Image (cartoon, rainbow, N blue to C red; front, side):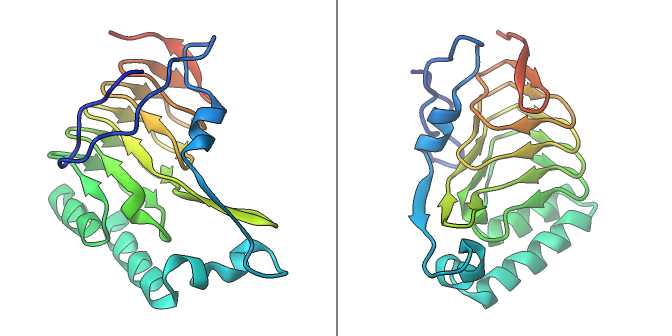
Length: 191
C-alpha cells in the first residue's frame, strides 16, 4: 500500500495497490463509505435533515459554499471552507463555481498547492432510494483537477496526480498519474 503525505496534520487513507488498469478499484473506494439504510419508507434523501445535522447546518454550509464559489480571493475561499470543516492545505486553489458537498464538507481534504478547476463537484455523499452513503474525499498535494470534473465519495487522488477536464473520478488515482474520462482511466503513468 502507498502512503500519501498528511494534510493539516491528518493522515490520508491508504491507497490500495492499483488494479490491472493502473488505477484503484471501485470496490476500494466503496470500502471507505459508511452505508446506512433509509431511515423511513421514502427515498433516503427525504430524510437528509436527520442524517446531516438538520436544516440549519445544511443551510449554513450552503450559504458559505455559495459565497466561496463566487469570491475571486483564493485566500478568502480557503478561510470560508475551513469554517465549514474542510481541511485545506497551504496555497490550495479552488476555481470559480466549484461545488463542495453541502451535507458533509468536513469530509473533504485539499492538499498543499492543489488546483480544482472551474465548475467541478466534490461529493461526500450518495443518496439512493433505499440507502445513503457517506465517505471522505482526499485530494493530495500538487494535484491538478480540470474543469467540470466530478469526484465521488471515498475517492483518493494521490499527490502530484492530474485529472483532465470533464472527468468522473469514481476510484483512486495513484500519485503522479494522469487520468481522464467518464469514468476515469489511466492516460499516462507518472513519477
